[in-house]
Amino acid sequence: MNIRHLGSVIIAVSNLEKSIKFYNEIIGLPIKNRRENWVELAKQGATVILHPATRPINTGTSIENGIVIGLVVGDIGSAIEELKAQNVPIYRDTVSHKTGKNAIVLDPDKYMISLFEPAPPDTAKQAQGFHGFAPL
Image 1: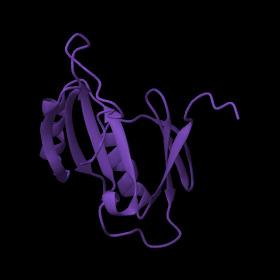
Image 2 (image 1 turned 90 degrees about the vertical axis):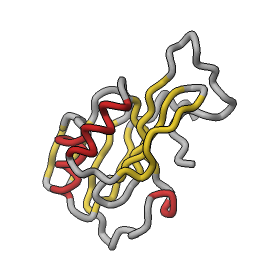
Image 3 (image 1 turned 180 degrees about the vertical axis):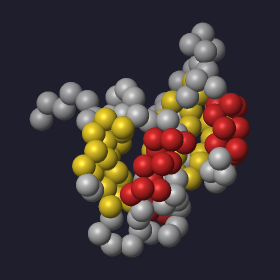
Image 4 (image 1 turned 120 degrees about the horizontal axis):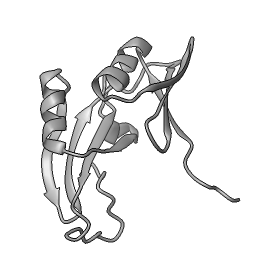
């Protein structure tokens, strides 16, 4: 198998319009393609695809249902303040690591969105296996 890169992450959502508003208007991912029950959003890298769930979504956080979406941000402090101002639930406020700063917010279906601001290249010492998005 010759995988070149991750193409997309498909997220089953309970309310498509609510999720579009969250990922497009609040998080800021541009809509690249939209059909009746399929919305593709992307800035760079992998595409986030929203698709209506055919069954009820797990009501626990995504740490319980196995989904965490990682986004790299330029300034985590201002990102968290913007999200708080829009009443986005903060699962874990900003913590600092050797590799940068990380915080976790929840989307409308309680999927975890891990925000990561990398440390400047000259100070970051990448820990083995840690990429900045770990929810714990």
